Image (cartoon, rainbow, N blue to C red):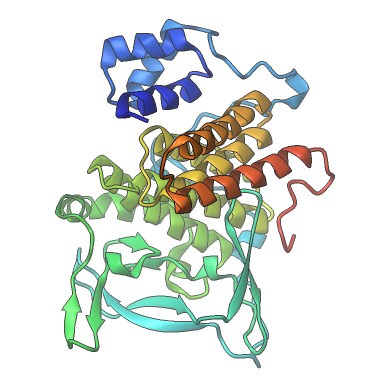
Amino acid sequence: MSEDQEIRRRLLVLFKNSAEMVDAYLSQFGTDINMKHIQVIREQFPGVGDTNSMPAAAQEPEVVVPKSSMDILFKFNDKAFETPQGDPTKDSPLYPRVVDCPICQKWGLNSQELRAKSLSVMNDPFMAPVYKSIGQFREVNYLLASVTVCSGCFLASPDRKDFELYNRTTRENQKSQLAPQVIRELKETIATRKAFFDKTGVGDALYTIPRSYAAAIVSYQFADIRAEMEANAKVQGAYFKRGNYWLRIALLCRQAGMDDRLALQVAAEHLKTAFYMSDFPKADLECQTIYTLFNLCLYFGNAKEARDYLTVLEQQRQDQEKLEKPNEEILASIRKWLEMGKKRWEDRDEPNFWKTPGL
């Protein structure tokens, strides 16, 4: 498939198979997919390609999705400030890694990694991880510990490579993988992040591992603030990261007995952008994202749009199979996520369809 054909395919999904809207977009803006331009075309064709025509009883109320994590302040309930405690007589599945901050140079940050084979992982309906203990290891929800947050400047990430690491083999510090533009912006906006931190109300619980549900949600918001800067700098995979951070926030909301709909709406917006821009570090992650978007559409009552995403996977399968030498790894991934999607579609009326493991 040529690049132009791929762009047209993505726009067809975006505009709900309206070829007229796709032609208008390409004639006005070319092949560079931009969400602001997409909204312009939507306004030019009111009602065309609209999949939000399900019966009113099946629709969730419209949610206005904020542009930035710093525009969202959660109202935490009492349970959100609890920290689940596993059996203290069992071994901890966490072990510390010393990392330093590339922004404010604060050293010895509290970063925790997961011991190999210490926890099993199940997924919620949107592919966010739910952790369960194995053998001698105590129960720990790793989402409460996975994000490293600098107490000096609020740089946050679940990826240790975003910080400076000490390499014991070379006895040298390994520099942060963050792009220079992102590092510069993070340095210039410390005061803004500090102001947001003060508004969240979680206080020093943000640095206590494992965290409370509330502090863990805020830790992922700070990670998203960093990823937003990466997206602005056109770092590959930034929108994919942002979507998945918000899927984890949604799961934490559920685990804390809070409403998850806003978090899922934010996740869907970022994952849609990742899909339209093909913003994925690996091909398998695109298939996973299409599957996740399929589930998000179902959750919000947009059955036709959900089917559109399955159609995308079906078309990708057919395109690969037509090749003289198909990429077997990509083809296997497409088939896997397509079959999972078809099974979910068949089971959509089951009573536990949206059940989160452990809840």
